[in-house]
Image (cartoon, rainbow, N blue to C red; front, top):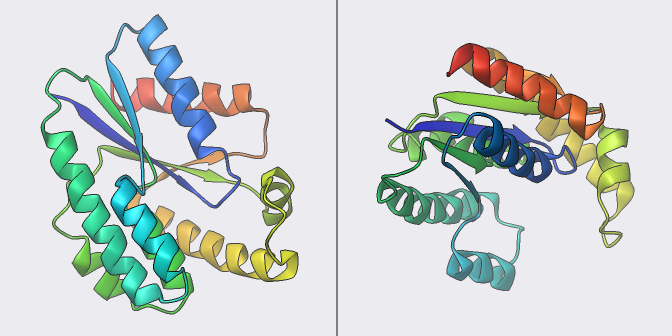
Length: 189
């Protein structure tokens, strides 16, 4: 039966990089069939969010849940994968929209019907390091630092609550990959 790994972390933590490096490593070294997907998943939902904006956190919870339903439905049709790596999952909604003041219990309830991942790897790093990695200069740095600090705090709380594996993402991408591989080999395969 296929395993499900969610990779979570604040913007700039290296989720996409790690997901792709893991796929490459696990396919070449362990001969696993690995699928990498990311959220948001549906182009239609992404366009809708971009059209209406990112300012209504309750609406975002619902739109991300709708997107997740489309995503999970698509994933359920994949039969030949040994491992599915999710670049973000419902914990992102809890962390990001929770940091904006949406009731976390409600967010959890909205997402309670989605499959639980077999493992969650949280890429944690100082906000300043994350900001230095984000290539988009269109945001207000002071505002972004404050919001990411709140999101990071939520993620660290979730890590304790759900027993995430926390990896120091401030390290070189190869060191992060090595840590993640050890965690996966020890706990999944």
